[in-house]
Image (cartoon, rainbow, N blue to C red; front, side):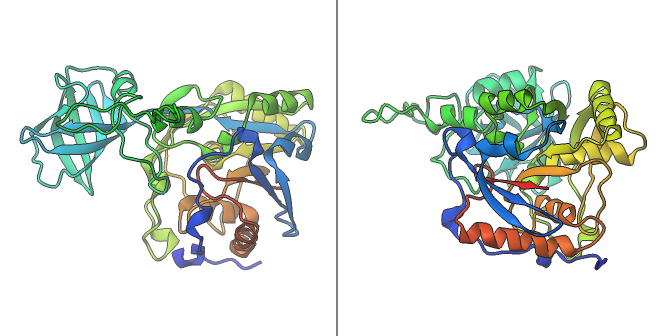
Length: 381
């Protein structure tokens, strides 16, 4: 096995634009599922509905139960200029970390008003650079509750929609009156109503993510029932997916990349169930790279136990894995930390997984699989 630190350029690949999924397959479990044997490199083609039959009795699925919040919002300067905002996290009561687009001329101390709730003020406290700000919201309110009223779904930049801000059922806001976002001839509701449902796993429970754990988007109630009937257990962990999940690695060498931090939690009951399963020789199947990061973060700190906090764990070839035996994942962007983690999983302890995953991606492109958040899935055995 080859063991060396790869370069970021090793994770480039060309993808035709038409293979970037702009909407999910309906129903969810009709998406395609590539099965990759990382030992032999063998590839088989299935549909997601076949997943329960492809797993083993006794397998333990680990799901990320984070819930995507409608984190995009629109603010207005006193001059009348509009600024698009993205909520990232709540620092403390009434203090947010946000990303602001079009705020290049804004100054510390300036007050912005929320377009949908003009009596609510966001005062710019500090400029962190690259569009990041700390703001004080007054009157203080629960961030998630406010965003549920005024926000919109923070879809990835490669999913294209007509401009939208504000409450479901309305189009972009301007100084003019809002126009209903309906297509009278077809009677279809605004895309925001749809995306709030489809860009969310069916088991999402804990608000805090600004991006979906996309491997979980394929699950349906029927799939979960079938898994249970086959004595394949599941449990939940939490990792609130952050904006950095879309960011490409810019450093030439991977060991120079500064990983974004995301909040996670592994409960005592989940830790015990995972430890018991491992002791019994049962496989741990992580649903998504986010579940992998929770488990491997917790394992890196010692014997598996209840843990929570912020993780900046960056797994790339020739990384090792302590807990995860099998992974369910989507097809990821070039140069992304997600693709690097998956490559490491294909051949732990070496860089051979880069070739394995790139061969699998080339096959997916030949077979016209759908890529990225709303795309198809891959099961790595």
